[in-house]
Image 1 (spheres, rainbow, N blue to C red):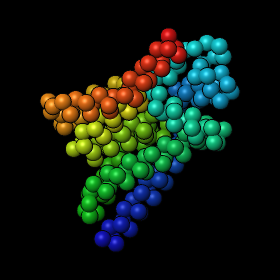
Image 2 (image 1 turned 120 degrees about the vertical axis):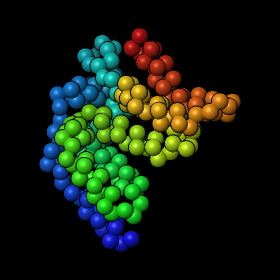
Image 3 (image 1 turned 60 degrees about the vertical axis):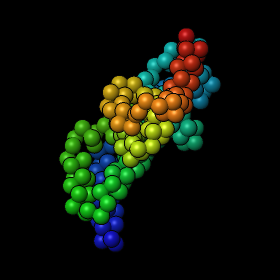
Length: 203
């Protein structure tokens, strides 16, 4: 057990090193950064002052950036640190699912490190690390229908088209009962709240 924990810690350190070395911020991320800066400048969630235009597609990621930018007042490195932390947490959760199988943990981490797409987009300033964390959480809580419904709602708020990936995980726990329908409706409240807000705010 102790050796396994040491191996897992070493694998996470290795992943951390790779993420830091490969970290970058793509140009699309600066669209979000501008909206964040406009908000903290007192211009609201806008692209240009006085023009209510939604220039972002990931409300939940924008919310995280708003919170942390409010503390750091810097967007570039804040997005990188946030992405790295989310990625490490996500991979740590996956390694926990490996139980005490050190070889599985090592195989998983080396597979992720060898994936250029995974490494590039986990630390690119976009919503990918948050989306990865939510999907892994759906796997971990797939037997808890309310939590799974809430996570599906958060996936939609992170990247709408990713619902096509997350919905099958959610459907695994669905059944026709009044209680399940009620839980699904409660879990969908974040989506409903966002749609109402965006309709009023952006028109």
